[in-house]
Length: 363
Image (tube, rainbow, N blue to C red; front, top):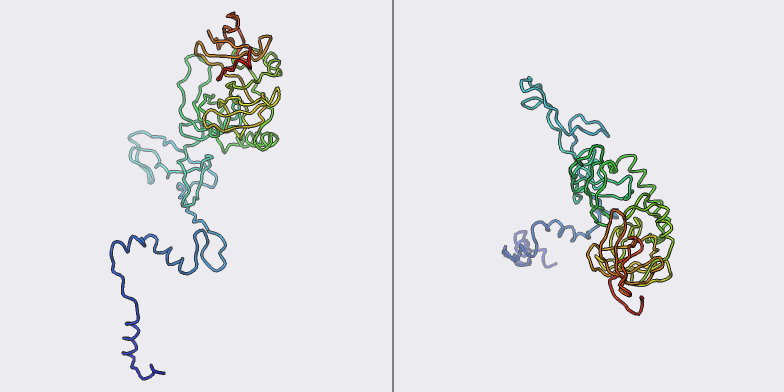
């Protein structure tokens, strides 16, 4: 053709003249294509998309794994000694020992959110420093026994030891599901990776599956005394009686309701479906939970004098009254009824806070 008579030099000049003008290296150019995204831009030009792997047969993104170094001579599955035992000041240092005696501290170990020691991690995964076995501030643990059995928590602080000998030491923890802060005995806490924790967690998980999708249904309350000094048989008799009314403020005591996220939270009864079932709205996030059994709830009795209450059990059921004095140790409250101004002593389970007055519904 027409190009056969051109020399190699002329062909080169022709190709160069056909190229687009070179873009000026200005700040705007770099802003449109930052240096850290340059590699992605090249890969997108070759057909790569965000979230896909690299290669002809790649179907999904492969996460990069980072290996964490282990302390020197630490065997597989072994836990290192975190504390260094100091020797005598005049001890002659041996190879591998620090000045002043004692072995060198090993490298820091890391654990996941369940407290398990990890030796690998993904680039976007956050790990925490492994704090060793036992109750420690900032550590995630499992409540293996007691009222809050089966719930995961984070240790906020270890309370001072009691003055009386033989009394258990307590720790202040935050329940991970409901984010409520409670005090539990230190001996009731177990490491998440311990055999007892695994057994308790599996047992509670199987119980939760029998409660339905959202965990609604009946609940067995913890053994022992609640709201003061009354026996379990007395509480059982009162619990069988229907006590639900609209506009009552109650507390969720079911650990499985909404997968534990509603545990120990206060709520208001908005609708009574039948004598022992109701719909509630949580105070903190205004979420509505339908079809909650009264066995999953307990009455709330405020301390403030003059608070409006409603008698929910007994011969005075449905009568409004005001708080005069609350005796938590005995589980009793002294109230004054608004109908006849009579003063009576009621059990804390027999009265409940009334958040909205409706004269047509009561008395």
